[in-house]
Image 1 (cartoon, rainbow, N blue to C red):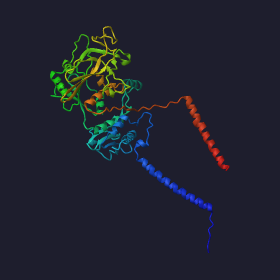
Image 2 (image 1 turned 30 degrees about the vertical axis):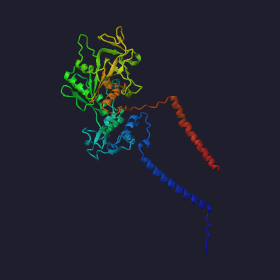
Image 3 (image 1 turned 180 degrees about the vertical axis):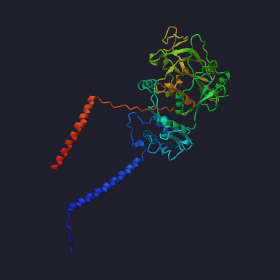
Image 4 (image 1 turned 135 degrees about the vertical axis):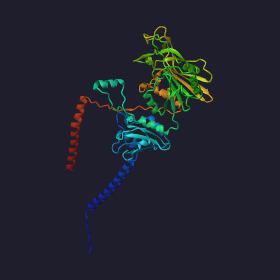
Length: 497
């Protein structure tokens, strides 16, 4: 007996269509899962985009270019308790290391790996904070970046005064996110072949190097060490440069002999001085032996207080004693951004000998405009304004003597103002960029690593009352009514089919 199944053809079509839908859905689901896993393996720079209005996660071109040149594997350890990592630090490190296959990130929980930080530092760091360790396993070099050097507080004197006046105490909350400078400096430190050393002299009443300048040198990975010229037999062989800043007492002839020997060996001396203003009735004492050393290389001190007569090239607040010098075009000036200026103050003039000593080349580095003027007899009531009898013209306020010997090229770079070595000018003028260009050449080092920190304060979106009313009507009234009307229209159309 044969039984004939009389099925509904429509049902078969529905069954086939349903099976097809199930298969397609399964395939799409697999593709989505695989794609999601693949995207999850991509570096953060391809999957996350910074929309922070203060550029908190931005990475500058300075760091990007530096990272391109890294040839060795470097690991950035994020040391923090599991689940308590500082989110901005962790996010930034992942973005930063994602720029190169040579950079790696690893998170370390100090509770699970006690003593991890002790391998790299003697500092006692807060385990509850997020600290970083940058390590080059190839050469064993490392640098610890504490949390407190990433989130830093920096206030001007005016801000501190205003804050104290308003609240009755000094602020201590962090104002800057300085992680990029710290990471790039650490990366430079662990990968550079030679660590440069710069000495500064002591024992002659020299200017004491402030903590701000020491930090700037540390960021450049230049060791800054004190050198007592009286006790050392010769300038150390590892000295890439020697800084003499505002010596108020003279060098001995034996000490200047050491300076000459150092220059003959190819060393670089940075001499920083200023016009010596003494109280009326007191005798002016200049470091004659030190200036004789400079004169032996073709540069001499002129006892003139230099001013700038071009109002476009002076500091509007302090006046003509604070001048923006004209820079001679060379490799040093090329390091100064075109939209910035230098500041020099209390300058004396530097004279370049018409007949340079044998094997010595002289160069003017900075000068006033042709509207410059100088005063030679300074008293308590002497005005800074130009007066009858003042010498006029362009005055040199920074110069260089290069001496070529069979041992190399030695240099004396003379700045007639302490402003070049003043950390207080950083952020306002480009003195530091120029100084680092000179030292980078002396240390045979690459470009300066100077990156501005990110300001942590947020700028608020301000909306006027009229704009607020318009947006309120649109978002609370117009948009919901429009959505309801469209939805009702679609419902009515489908119902009438």
